[in-house]
Length: 248
Image 1 (cartoon, one colour):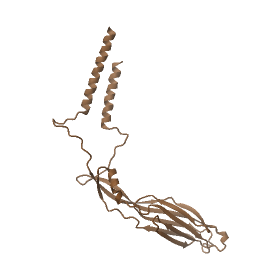
Image 2 (cartoon, helix red, strand yellow; image 1 turned 90 degrees about the vertical axis):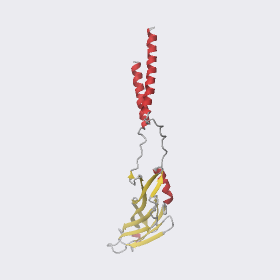
Image 3 (cartoon, helix red, strand yellow; image 1 turned 90 degrees about the horizontal axis):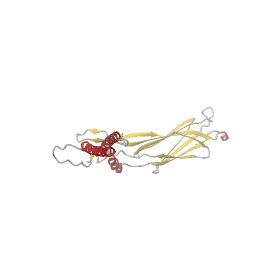
Image 4 (cartoon, helix red, strand yellow; image 1 turned 135 degrees about the vertical axis):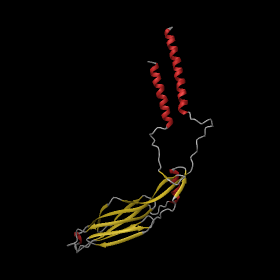
């Protein structure tokens, strides 16, 4: 009989705990509306984003090669950015077979062809050579300076129609050597290095408030709990605590 009373008491207490938890949920989720009807959540509104176009540059890893006197060396250089404004190809070498550094100097030729078909070429006869070929005026800076969109991602998608990709892709490079050594069997060719630098425009976005001030764009990390998740964890913690004490 005493056991049945104890069991009934625990059932009553469990029901009481459930009522308390339901009340806690109401307290956590209740918001004061001042006697007025609650205002439904607002849908996302269109924002204004200011766009600043900054010019960046990238220098690719230096290519170090050897070209024989009978066979040109060909390379493919891939540029993977949009809005490329200019590209510079710089070939340098040192002729280690020239007699006294004066006689028998090699002649190196650098030829570059862009993805659009533009071709440039230059040659130089030197003990220590330096050839630079520059392609400029490839893409212009977009004129758009502001865009309206619901989110930053939408703003980035919106400006895609203003971005051009002239000469993005594979550039063809050819290096050839004409040896100057009188005893040509002594000169097999020449070592050289190629450095490629290109410049391009990159967009930067800043949200503009109604007063005209720029607002730093922020995003919430995926591993941070939301407000509702924090409430649920608090209620669950209360339930676990009460249950543990009840059945001790």
